[in-house]
Length: 571
Image 1: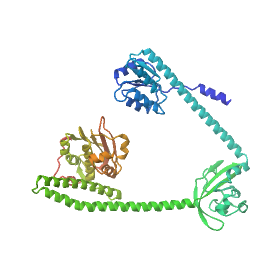
Image 2: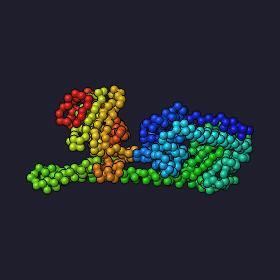
Image 3: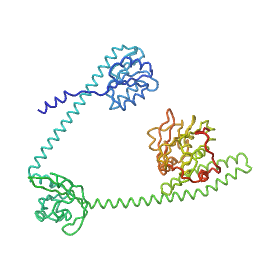
Image 4: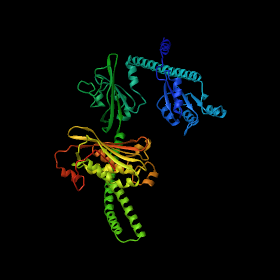
């Protein structure tokens, strides 16, 4: 009967999924020709202009057949086929080579050697290609049906196993003695106790004597409260049972308590309760585990965690103190270098002095980064709330890089959405610091092209507005697999970046912390066709009527900024 049922189910299997065919040719006209041959069929044609693009498509979809050109720039058809056949997911997909290389046996031998199932020369007979495709599609559909049949058989097998387990469980519940024998395991290191609804102990396992010090004869027939004083409530029903009081069976959540042994010593224990109905009588089972060692380990872990936190705080405080102490004499060195450059020096002396000044500036930048990061890590960084002119803040951040961008022949520009408020309330210093860091990175890693900053509102609730800033560049870009490392402290894309561009690897980590401090988030993505886009949001309050003079002073401008005549700027 079971076999007949399975045959009937298998007979109903129908594959109605998409039939994908991958067409790979660097010539779009050849792809159009292939599409003309196969387009009237119920196939989903996926067209790729390179082997690399084809490999990306194969990661996401299943394909019935691959029609692959041989001669392609970069990765040719043979290399593409080798890579396809080297992956477990794609190695069984049939590959048909279509080549214009002429009747060259060497190409054909190579095609079959890399795993192709057929090799056709251009110009090809459309009907022959169509017939071959239909044959491979038929094989693909049959394979899919076999997979579905296997899954159905597996499901039916699981169902039969479940039914079998239910039958075994029902047989187990028919006998009170069998239930007791199944609950109590003589090999368990935990104490296992069964008792009835009145709380009388029915059976125990040998672990009882090791854990509690009682023998089996001392506890059988006695109240379970002898071993577990807090277990039973006034009517002798387990007070902490979950689902066991009303249903035919149930189990409680683990409960940690302290229990006493026969000699009066106490230990930490974890108990688990379960219940079932046997011959219309409720039987309970309890497992007692000695968790003394586990509790001790937990206490040691807590102590170790506290020690590690103390050490981390000490490290952060030390880092902040050392950075601050180094910065003070460093300012003196830079000041003296600047004064020295204003004196009459010969060419060699001036070169030495300029090297001192540049090296000191670089060292001071590193010290400032470390000090900022130490402040953030220690939780001592606080937000200010002042009213400031948004476009003036943008101008101040952009102006710092005007000279450098001109030197590199870069177009440095920004644009602001007309819907933006003219004034907002927030920490202009930290916002400017994030902008300076991101724009500075964009200029640093862009050899040609442009750097553009875009500001727009995301949402507003009347009392506050969420702003989004995007810094777009056409620079070296960031590989996708390296992006998770960007906002980690002391991280670089690779060691060559440090040598070529310099930096501590703290800048983006500081930006991330500052943005999150301003209740925002920061992310990075590719800027098509090249470069990167760093985007972050911050939440700013709307002006509350405070004087515009305060906003101008908060921007650090030294003069008032008139309302902007337009919504964008280019340098």
